[in-house]
Image 1 (tube, rainbow, N blue to C red):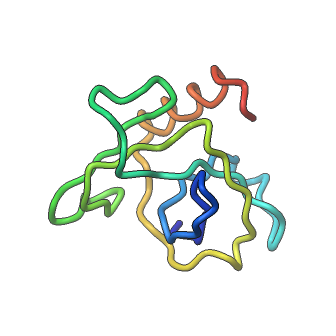
Image 2: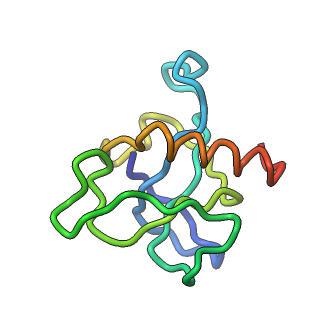
Length: 108
């Protein structure tokens, strides 16, 4: 999903968010929890980041066109009605890495 998310300085920007809730826990217009995605991170990525599949032409699963990472300690809460657009999906192995990192960072 793409939503308007404030960055650490408070500036709102449309960015992808990886939902980290089970589908069955999402209510019609209840809060949804996700982690923000960034294109600005060092190499190698820090331990709070999980890199996402991307391609200059748009990755077939994620749709991402730039080097990107899920920032696992940057949780955002939003309502489904706030989504600007639907995005792609994160492949299973990558999603498991994100969920594991969120758990390891104790930010749930």
